[in-house]
Image (cartoon, rainbow, N blue to C red; front, side):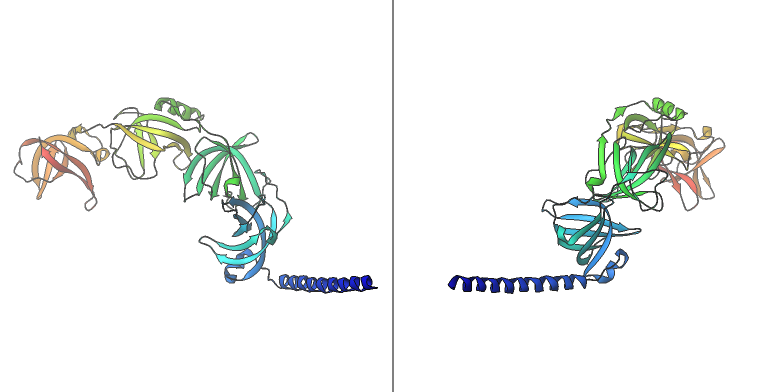
Amino acid sequence: MHDLQLSGSAARAFVIVFSIVGITVLALIGYLSEVEEVGLSDLEDHAGEVVMTRGVVLGTVHYGSGASKLLIFDRNDTAEVYIETSGKEYRPGSRIVVRGEVYLGDERPGITSANDRSIEVLSNGDAGELGGWSKHFDVCSVRGTVVSSDRVGWDDHYLVVQFFRGDAQERVEALLLECEEGPGPGDLINVTGVLGTEGGLLCFGPGSLEILNRAVPSCISLRQLIQEMELGVASLEPRTLEGYLRYEPSGRSFYIGEEPSGSLISVKVSVQEPIEFIHKGDLVELVNCSVSWDPDSLRYRLFPELVRLLEPYGTWAIKLGSLDYGVGEFEGCLVTVKGVLETVNGTLVLIDGERSLIVAGMDEGETGKEVKLQGTIVFDTFDNRFRLVVEEGL
């Protein structure tokens, strides 16, 4: 009889505990059911609130602390999902629902979740190959060769990738976000991202990039490169070559040829920042050049990683009267020039035959005499004329 009474007490305790658990679960379900679902475009209006939202996974970044960050999108809207403790891999193209607290990031809004249990995967993604059937906002993969690669942020990269669609050779632009190690020109890669309305790819995280083969830089002469360009078979792999500056550099571009002057070959070179230590006639080495076709000028362009000065040309000896097109090609150059100094309308001028050049930086004591001057050719934007800024008379 005593044993039966003990079992009854245990049963009553079990019923009480079960009831408490049931009430708690029901309360939790009720709480979750009250969480508002918000579209990605409206997340910014709910900063600090706990909401639910859904989107398509673009990529993942894993941190050493065990946290992860996803980038999700819904057409043109994107948001971050920061998971404090995550051991799960979310495939690009997967559709998910996430619950968490909204925060405002530097680039876009986001949601913080404690762990993977706050995320429900509605469908696993499978990125298809980019093709003529691909639609805007599809998650696609491209396998091809990098034509150019520029770092545009701390860990962001802007890529141009050349690939084949059937027998046709095409190119696609890709913006790769939060990927520390980017590819270089000539690398064979596979990149995955969402296809935007302008036809480019937006990619996120190291998992969106697979470097299949690293290009090995090679050396080539400028003439060989020109021949490849003329045949339309210029390699996308980086090259190292030498050439002479045809003109004084202008901003972030200059032209190189086979000779300091008179060369029939002229190829445009683009650099990240203006280079102050190179001048017309200098022999330079272009290290790890990538070759790209410029549709605007209908010419090839070179993009070197590094420009080295091998041999400065020095001072140009010019004959003013023999310059058919004036001194414009020597702008910024150190030159020596002969002529007769005269004063014309109060301005000191060096005259050689029918050609003349304004002289600055010296007095008029030498007028009427033939002199040899050394100075720099500069362009005066005030009167739109070139001047010789004299350093010394020779």
